[in-house]
Image (cartoon, rainbow, N blue to C red; front, side, top):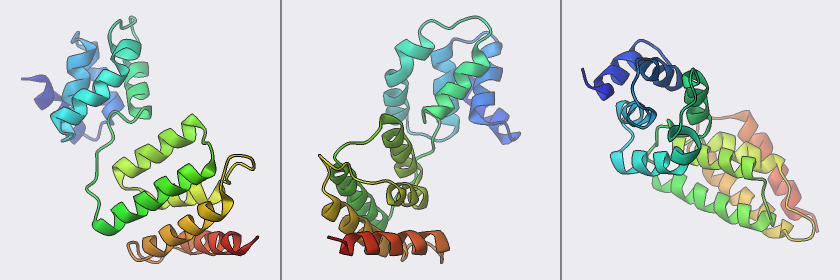
Length: 183
């Protein structure tokens, strides 16, 4: 049985991608082929799989520590290596464009926040991204508050057309509109 087939079988038994990685790696397989197999079993395209694994190869996969399979699987999952990309509609792509403009208007963003947003864009969880940005603020010295809040207002107005009524989005949109009208 090849590694991708083994990974697909393990995932079909309700194992998480991290647990699937750990199980197969514990069987004595090298980390890179195991991580690649899990990605391919999740139907992540090979080119994207290769890019993701290249980004973390040196730090996580090149020199595995003994008995670290579970930790490595969890780190790969936390880094978004196993995130399944969602094809976005034209409206959703426009929402993401607004988000990117808002991120620029923030005047700076913490790396962890940027990483979380990127994962949400990849998986299509635009609601979480919107709520996160609506709860943040542009930096006083380097940000552009007017652009930030008006862009998030436009993003929210598009977003409410793509999801069933979600009170959290409605509340966040009201918050962004209010902030956009302040001097």
